[in-house]
Amino acid sequence: MDLVVLVLITFVAATVNGALGYGFSSITVPVALLFYTNRILNPALVLVELVINGYVLFINRKSIPNIWWRVAPILIGLLIGVAIGSYILSLVHPAWVKFVTYFMLLPLILLQAAGIRKPIKAEKAIAIPFGVGIGTLYSVTTISGPPLALLFNNQGYAKQDFRAALGVIRVGEAVFTGIAYYFIGLYSYGSMEIIPYIIPSVLLGIPLGSYLIRWMDPESFRRICMAFDALVVAFGLSRVLIELNLTTAFTTYSILTIVMMLNAYLLFRFFRDRTVP
Image (cartoon, rainbow, N blue to C red):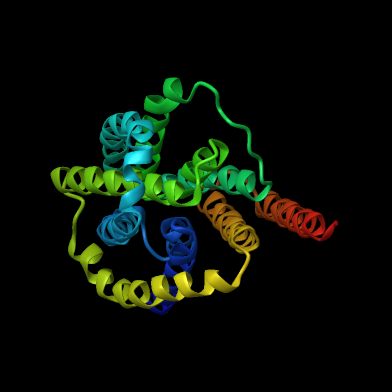
């Protein structure tokens, strides 16, 4: 059953990634963590994402000169963050890693769903600290799409520049994290065993997403994906809070209900504003 779910969710995630240029891990991980620990899941996803993001970077390579000097400082921060996050992953109990994953991901997704965009004037000043944060987050969770999308959307990147910037950062973090995982011994038979189940989903999903987005409004598609993601993350957070005995079942499912209501309101507001002349 867990492998069937993994195949289905990676297919959906790959389709979203093909359409938007990101979203593979942020959709796969919240669901897959219900069946696997980060120590099993992360090494497999890092290797798969290296190929996915390498492809994204290749098809947007002409825009790399436009964004290189804006993203280069972030790569410096990534090196530091990946070292920190990989060390944390090797030490912390899997249930607590799940909790941190869900806890950090939920507000980022809701911020995207709310469509909040406020350009940061001191872009150069925040680049390296942002890179440290992204590197730490990615090496612990393999997720970085939501904060990266928030930053690059806020800073007004053009479509191709946006995809090129994502490609550069995500290839960098996958390479750095893959190397760090090797040195701390995270690769295992369990991780390698699930890769063959993910690859066909990726090979089918990415071209499908690239095709579908031609016939859909990208922003509407993105908001629907974020709404789905928020529900999955909220459910996962509820489950792990019970697993860690941090709160009662009533409290955790109250959190899930609040997120569902907020999610529904954000979607309603988005589509209402889109239809107003």
